Length: 315
Image (cartoon, rainbow, N blue to C red; front, side, top):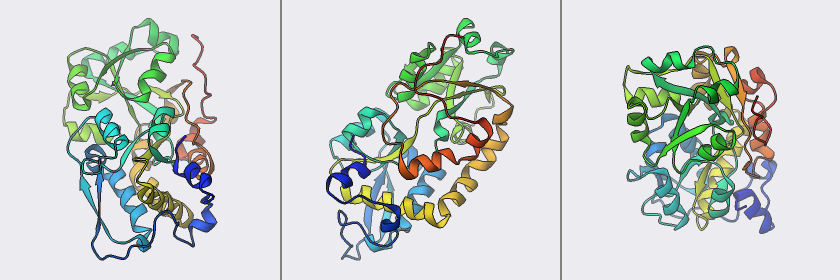
């Protein structure tokens, strides 16, 4: 898989943290121009305060690569954004933060540090007020299936295959905003959103009819990474280096605390019924620094071992 770590290793330039803290990586020469590098971030990431802040942190930690400006990409769905990256269309988009999958790691360069410590794989249901009774009394995954709770997901999202592999009904659409309309139209009952993003989603939507179901939590191992086109090695290395420096100096932990501690506590994760779902397509990049960050997030302390890589039985 074409993660930036594996690419550098294949070039004989592995990037251990100790080296990254001292030297710029040869794949991205020092900037010799005062003209800021323009970096186009996928619009949904740009509009997310947390994701934009983390990319900005990584770039700020690498001043030897020159100045930069972040620009919002044109609005496009996730599938198109990834195609533009794969086609190296740097005029449309250069960086996207999305969930990892083997195909995405093959087609693009992945900076294999989960940007939220793996919290994207911890999912709660966004539903409507009148559908809340459908969830009352659910304590087993079998209850979810027997009550025919349907899950709304993006057509191109890795979550879709994970949920289906665990025997759950999934309704898809390529448009993120359209999925909220479909939820309110009764096309499905649960729009499964990551605990690191759900409050931001609802604040953006500003719809009092949408609520977070209070008792259920679905978990699966699914890191989300910054991805760039496979020819944009210099940018990938810069982001990797910046994130590793942020982890080493504690500013990554400060970022996590600033953007994710409050929503995790508000969601009362430890008080929910937890359903561990398997991810048969678990990416191979969850190693090294990314794995350490994933294991040390507060939510994993509360909930114990991370789920396995096989679908849960029909209990």
